[in-house]
Structures are given as structure tokens and as C-alpha cells.
Length: 97
Image 1 (tube, rainbow, N blue to C red):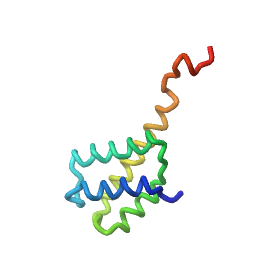
Image 2: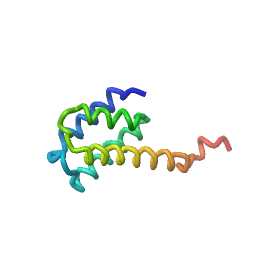
Image 3: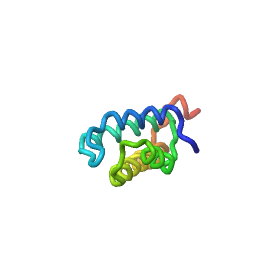
Image 4: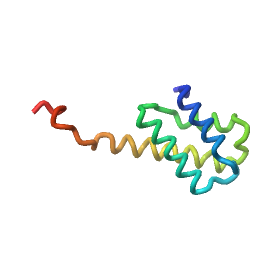
């Protein structure tokens, strides 16, 4: 599945936000999680291999560990959202009772 324009915009946002591309700070990690959380809440889906490929080819991310960390964060957020999505409470109006 190719990356959508919205996902690419957010990946560019991450690239612009992170100053030291060789090592992510805790603040960077928190911000990256928020970016991916925002994407999944808007029902944007992304392929982790495509994200890794994008960062590898972007040019500024020469340290593999940083790229893998971002992919792991994307995976964590997407998995967490999918696991909790079915636990959301259905309102009384939606149940048809």
C-alpha cells in the first residue's frame, strides 16, 4: 500500500521537527507518537515497510537506528489503536435498544 499524501506530509513534519537525526530525544519520541496517533485517529493507514523505505530514501536520516525507531513507534501506535478501537463504548443511540 503506497503512502498517502497526508502520511507523507506528516513524515516531512517529523523530518523537519527532529534536529539530531542520529539520535531521537524523548521529546522527539513523544512528538512522533502524537503525529502517528493523529494519523490513525483520522483513519489514515500506512505500511511500515513504506515508511522505512521513505525515511531511508529521504536523505537526512543516515543513522539506521533512528529510522528503525520511528518505524517501531509507528507500529506501536497503529497496533495500540487497532487493539483499543473495538473497546470504545457504543452510545445508547447507536445500540438500537
